[in-house]
Length: 69
Image (cartoon, rainbow, N blue to C red; front, side, top):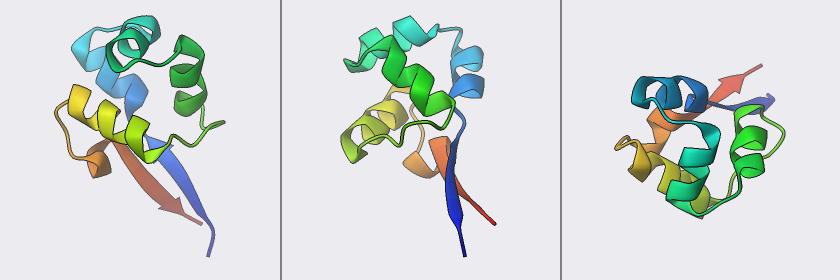
C-alpha cells in the first residue's frame, strides 16, 4: 500500500488571506519551502508541520493527511 502525503495549505492560506511569503515569514522558513510543501515536492519536518498547524490553529491531521493508493 502506497501512501502520499497531501496538505490543505493553499486552502488554509486562502481562508486566512495570507500569501506564501507571509506564511513563510510567520513560521521562519523561506517562501520556496512553503511552495514546495504545497506542491508536494517536499515533505516537511515535524517541526515545520507543527509550526504550520499552530499558525492555522488546527491539529496537524487537519493540515496534512495521507492519500492511500
